[in-house]
Amino acid sequence: MLKISVTGPESTGKSTISEKLAQHYQTVWVPEYARSYLSNLSRPYTLADIEAIARGQLRQEAELAQKANTLLFADTDLLVLKIWSENAFGHCPAWILEKLEQQPYNLYLLMGVDLPWEPDPQREHPHLRQYFYDLYKKELQRLQAPFVEISGLQEDRFRMALPHIDAILKEHN
Image (cartoon, rainbow, N blue to C red; front, side):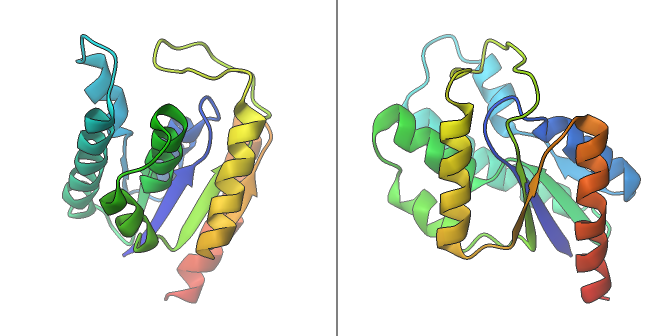
């Protein structure tokens, strides 16, 4: 199975494109576990919560992988949790960093910050999206991860992603 991570800063259309790509390729996508976790939290999140979210994301991805065809789209990955943890708490738990180095994604779609910001109670940094985008890009380069930058409006993003996904499908068939 080929795994594609949709990653990047807040409010960049990760969930929208993940769902749309999964529909297009007739497979499943892994929603961002943090959304449901945080919506049930009645206090400010802690580093322990980020660790619980990371475990939940990994568990949810493993469960949904059983239902996927040749492709699995993940809306969020451990890179998101690393950057979130380091920004909020100044460091990231070692086990997350270790797992991040081993993430089995065939392609990362790095979502650009050119979409308008959509307010959401779980989003925290409307004026720091470019800063975070640069962090994501730097980390993907450091990891030597295969990634493409995706930008434009939602439909443009979808069309921009398709040839890259088709290329890895062709390469692995």
